[in-house]
Length: 150
Image 1 (cartoon, rainbow, N blue to C red):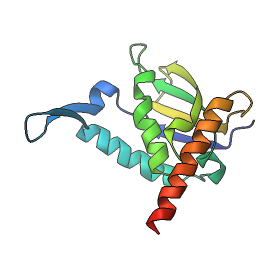
Image 2 (image 1 turned 90 degrees about the horizontal axis):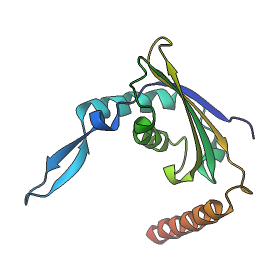
Image 3 (image 1 turned 45 degrees about the vertical axis):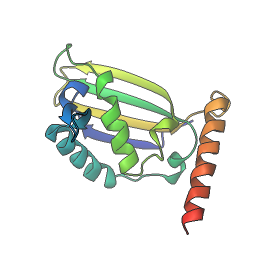
């Protein structure tokens, strides 16, 4: 299937730069996004809102291709994935990050400004029947919950 969504975003901060422990009342610890992660997410959200977001990407299994342009070989492209997936959901490009059935990550070193090129397409239902079935069940349950609130 052909690519139905393309966007170029600033490179997300790594997991190490995007999460910090926060002590809750009572002494328990949890992880929260850093100020840097929140700034990136806000900027990515605004950029994604300017790109055509086809509604067909909000259902069914998806394939995502990332071309991560980094300054040095030491930079890890894979540990930047979660913030990017969350931004795609928040901007309603995709319905849920659980839809992503295939990931392809290409690292490009020293090619100008650090950035990530995102491409999405619908994945083959035949190649991912179990995921397609589970997504349909989850979507049905969510629809029933929304209908119950009306």
